Every structure is written in C-alpha cells, then in structure tokens.
Image (cartoon, rainbow, N blue to C red; front, side, top):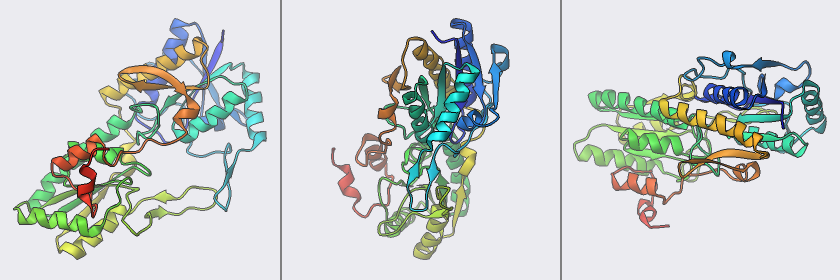
Length: 370
C-alpha cells in the first residue's frame, strides 16, 4: 500500500487542472489516509533542487472554479531532446535523476495530468518502476481511448460565445468574419463550436479545403440575401496543394508554432469575393479562465478515480470517459494515435446537412456513409 503519492501537471494549461488536483488531494487524504506531494513545473520539478510542496485538503480549498494550475506547468523540458534532423531522444541520466529524487522524497506513485507528450513521459516513469496513473488533459480533445478530455468543453463554450458576438458585427457590416481557433492536428474545437455557433464554413485539418470553394459558399450566401458569412478555422487547417501555415517555425530545440491560417483566409477571400473581411484569433484565451460546470464535474471525477485506481493496484493506465463511465485504459493505447475528426462521421454529416461547408472541392463525397 502506498503512503505518499505525487501529483504534477504538464503541457499546456487547460480549464479544470486545479479541479483535478483538488479532487485527487481530498480523495487521497480523506478517503485513503495518503500523503500528497505536489510537484511544481511538471516533471522539471523533479530535477536538481526539486520543487515540491505538501498538499492537504486545506491547500486545495477554493480550487474547483479556479483556472490555471497551482503547481505550474511546462510545455517542454529536459526529458525529451530535440535534434536538428527532427528526431528526439530521451536522456537516461535525466530520468535516473528524477527517479532517484522521487525515492529520496518517499514518493511511491504519481498522478500525472497531461496530454500526449506528458503522458508519454509518464509511461516511461512507469517502466522505470514508478507506478503512474494518467489524467487526460487537452483542450483539443485529441487523446485516444476517451470520449472527452477536461478543458475541451470550456474551450468550445468560449469559442461559441465568440462566434455569437462575431455574428452581430458581421451582419451589421455585411462582412466575412473569420475566427481562428486552436487545433494543430484535429478540428474538434472548430467543428463543435462551428455547429453550436452557426458558422457557415468550418475548416479543419481532417478535410483539405480550397479557397475557391470557401469563396463559392460566401457568394452563394450573398446571392440568397445573406450578405455576411462566418468562417471558423482550426490553426492546423490546410489548403489543398499548400503547406501548413506557421506563426513561428522555431528552432531545432522547439516545435514550430502554428498560426496565421485566419489571416491567410482573410486576404484570399477579400481578393476572391471583394467583400470586407476580418479575422479574430482566439489563441491562448481558449486555455485560460474558469472551467465551466461540466469540466469541473469531469475533472473532479477524473481526479478522484485516478487516486482510486492507484489504491486498487492499477498502474501504467489513464482514466478515461467511455459511455458515461470513468474507466482505466493503458497509457500506451491512449498515446498510440491521436483522435481525429472522422471526415464522414456523424457531426460532419450533420454540419453539412444543416448547410455548413467545409471548403472541400468535392463536398458531396463526404455525405456517404463510412
């Protein structure tokens, strides 16, 4: 039986991180009599002069509705080395130092909150003998084996609210308004908010688009008497025959940063349609702020179930939502592939049936059943 567990948050921040921490701490201390140590700044807090703090129920009071993470987080660190040729390696000495520090502090097991990259590191710790249970965190909702990741619904709500606001100015000025949202490899935020917010065009990485097809949709709306249009574009959306658009291509030590698809579409649509076009980029606004009621509930459920899984002897697993129940799945399965939007799935078909275009030159083929 474990006596002390550690908890850390890694990767980008997401609404609900503090709610998970709160639930994990109150469950561990109140139900199982365990000690909890919070590890600050992700896995980096285990290196050098370690950065940790004890966590009791009194330390997590009031966290349920608070955004961000009281433990801090890091997108990148020393546990993965990036090389100029695009390859990565995992420095064994860094892992050995971290495991030695865990042993020195008496931490028996870890609860790790993160996305694909963070959970990949967590799986390595489990292989090195440190029991780990992961909690799926990403506003992109692209982790496999779980129906939802906490933070996604709040991000979708925020993007939908932005679309509601853009509708009024678009209609007042008879403009095309473009909203760029997060979504490097998947279009879950764009798709869900686009449907909920009544967008006319949704551009996602899973369905290559052409600017001509988007312009055709705008012209068709004008011809029908609707002299404004709303476009939602995931940052990873790609035009047929073109490359991804980067805000910053970075350096060998850092991954390139996507951004600029909205500005590109704004310029091209103005050239093709002659209509005044504006672009709004939500960026990190989608990550910040208070989690909504659903994400507070989901995060609380995940945090409590993660501790319960450890107590029950499970390790190398991630808690996951499936058919309304929280279960555990192997971390290796959760990070094996990202969960993408099915190009002919139900939500895409519903969007098309209600008049939303995806800018594809061959829209009709996506109406077929899988």
